[in-house]
Structures are given as C-alpha cells and as structure tokens.
Length: 348
Image (cartoon, rainbow, N blue to C red; front, side):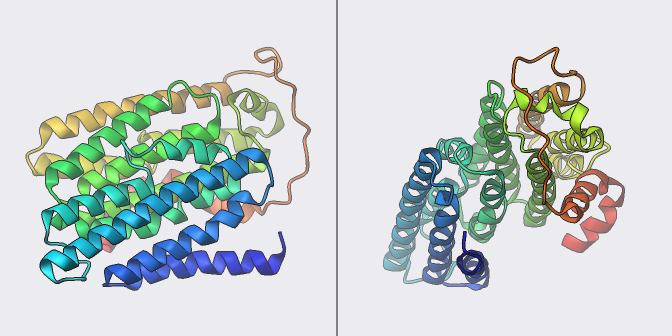
C-alpha cells in the first residue's frame, strides 16, 4: 500500500478513537466510531483476496448496523429525556439498546458471530489492529454508559461471552479464529466488572492489549496461521516458540504470568459484591479457554516436526519485522504479576 495512504488511514484510526474518548455528546462519539470503521476497511481489503474482501464487507455491514443502533438509541434518549450527554443515558429502553449496539461493535456474545469470520479473512497485522485498537472506543463508551444499564443485562453479556469464547475455540484449527474467541472471552470479563469496578475494566483491557499484541507479533514473526504450521515452530525458532507458548498461557490466565492478575482481581471484586455464583461460573469458563491455549502450546513445544504432521514445512523466509516491539510486549505479557500492587495504585 502507498505509504501516504497508509499514513492517512492510520491517522484516521487514531483520530476516530481520540474523538470518541474526548466526547461527552453521543453524536460526536458516534462520529468517532464511524471514522474508525471507515479507516480500517481499506486496510482489511488491501490484500485483494476474496476472503479479505468478504471479511471487509462483513465487518462494514455489522459496524454499520451497530452505528445505526447507537444513533437510534441516542436519538430516543434525547427525544424522551431531552439529554444528549453520554453520562445521562437515563431512559431504560435507550440504555438497553445502546448496550446491545456497543456489544455488537466489540463482538460480545450473542452478537459475536461476525468476529471469528472477519478475523479469519485478515492478515495478522490488520487482525492485531482489529483485536486491540478497534476495541478501545466502544469500551470507553461501555464504561461510561454502564451505570445507567440494567446490571442483569451486563452480567448476562459477560457470562455468555466468557462461555462462548471458551466453547467456540475448542474445535478450531485456525489460530486467528482461536484468537477471535479469546478476544470474545476477554471482553466478557471486562464488561461484567464494568458496573462494579471500572478501574478493573481498564486494567484488564491494558493487560489484554499487551498479551494479544505479543501473541499476534509472535505469529507474524513466523508467518503462522494454522496449528499444523505451529508444529514446525520449535525446530525453526525454539526461543520464540517458548515465549509464544508462555504468552498463550498468560492469555489463559495461569499464574505466575501477567494474565492471572486481572482475572484474580475481578474474581476478588465479585466475591466482595456478594456474587459467588457468577464468580464461580466465570472461573469455570476460563478453564475452557485454557484448554485450547494448552492445545496450542502442546502443538508448538511438545511435538517434533515432521513426525507428527503431514503439512508441508514452510520456507524459512527472512523476516523484516522489528523485534524490539515483540520483546517489549512479550516482557509485559509475562512478567507484570509481581508488581500488581503498584499497577493497582496507578489505575485506582
């Protein structure tokens, strides 16, 4: 892609998210979301592959539907209550509709069906943008709108997302789809706690950004998109295979890795809020996700190619990717648990 066009599109992505962050009016927030959507679609379709074009079309249709719902909910609230302010979403019908639209935006269950299909059609770097940057603006709106939304709705969205995110990834062989289901499960954790402790939503989001970025960049480094290709990773790059396996276990929430921190703090907060049953279901749903992460780790580190796979071994192409960003994200994805108290004092 032309560097000038790429710069324009990436700047528009940044502008859209910043607009939504800075807005207190629903129309301005909606405008930011629209700029965001329109800026990423050319990045999705740049491969000129039928799957990429299909993914871009599916993404456009779902995001356009969500944007129309957001506009309708904001207009309904203004019509009924005379208020356009984001923090004053006081009409119950408008608040429920708004939460459903934002859930569709980020791919929360049961509005998640588009996300694995879209992510599967993209290259790894565009998939990384979709899984990380594109979640920021809608989540900012969810955190602001959460106090006005029925707590039962948020709890159901969160529980369903963690269960679907764990269940859906079990039968997958494509790593991008597995990471899409991982994203759905993590979004469920963020949404369920947003009504009780918004600072924990921010903490979970930042840890999720570090871990997902490390996972995507590791896969990009070895051009890996299928589990069968993963089996050749150990003989090609043993150190990278080890750190990628640890990053995936961190995404699963195993101590003593970074991913354990947000889950531990959220379960602790739920116990404080007298929600032991919800906390138990969330913890059990995490075991489903952990199973498919362990499956990836097994394929990557405990199988020696070519004895265990019939896949053709890919060429060891020389990568031009910078290793500094990968090293930075991997370090944060693996080693932040010991400084949990310091991080908590920063976000509270």
